[in-house]
Amino acid sequence: MEIKVQKLRPDAILPVYGSASAAGADLSSVETRTIAPGETALIHTGLALEIPEGYGGFIFARSGLATKRGLAPANKVGVIDADYRGEILISLFNQSASPQTIEQGERIAQLVLLACPQARFCEAERLSATIRAEGGFGSTGKQ
Image 1 (cartoon, rainbow, N blue to C red):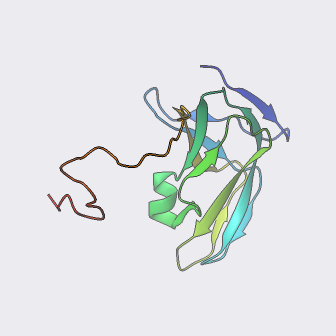
Image 2 (tube, rainbow, N blue to C red):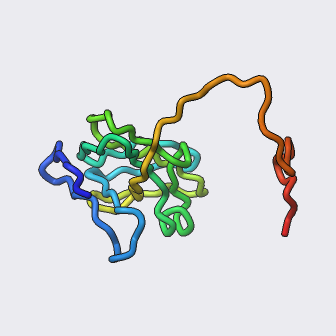
């Protein structure tokens, strides 16, 4: 699959996979920005994408950034629709106790592309029976 990428700034870095088997492509910051403890900041990538119809782009945390520095997407998972053509912005939340500085060129999130079929939702009087039924929130047990 080929994804068209428009650089909105000359110093923007194209998404890159960290290994041949990586599921997510790394997105990088085009700015240096310090995020205070408990603060959320929109970090610019300087990129716009053309995601194919039938797909979506999903923004996930980079595990090292989240685990070692407490920086993760504020909305947990960002969703980029196929018809969006604006700049990709990463909303990072600093959940650590100290200020965290994102450097220009630093990898800040992962972009995963997934097929996203649209369903047709239709109202029903009843749903089919299952063993689980209405059990939720831990109803399937700990093991």
